[in-house]
Image (cartoon, rainbow, N blue to C red; front, top):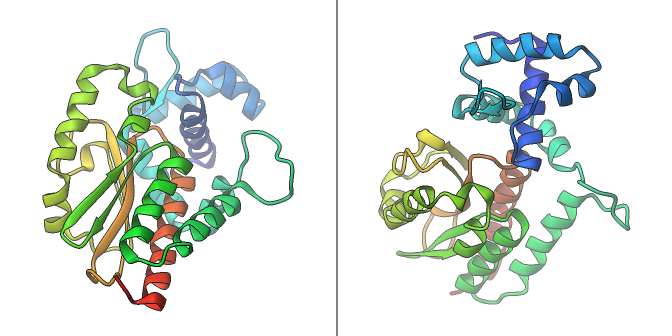
Length: 256
């Protein structure tokens, strides 16, 4: 599959608009964004549908990304680390100071983690911060235990007005701890999107986890679980940063 630059730009725009607004993205919105006709946008969207990267949930609706579309997006921004930083720095509204939103969030993580003198408290603090900063469910392994925070926060997302989806996520959580022990993701940052999840394939959520060394294990994990509709650039950057800060801080303190 080979996309033209415009097709890729349109796909990125659909993903980012949908993450922000949680409603299908129409050709009129994109036509204004790209300064071309709606007919041109519709033709390009048809090609993206043919590639399986976007879908139309209803006949009269705009388009939403598919799991394959999100995977393409994540792969592309992962190839360019500077792209992750750029996309995740965009503020939804002006701020009072010159500090970029992502940098402020990373500083919150660092302060929260470094304010703790015990490893388990530092890990819990990092998870709680990720919940606050991303709106997702946060999780981490602490020895043989799995710490989870933010279930109520996760279920306030519009995707979970559907009780069937809530039940699907609940079943996934029931099986998450043994899966994390057995899967042992091999990369420092791992992203499992929708049906890619080895468990809960129909729950339509994404799991983003970072591996880090701790006094408990060389393969401790911290991450978030949320709907496939999310700001991947921001969340990937924050999860990776949480793992890095934890590993450095816990190695320095080296106590339980």
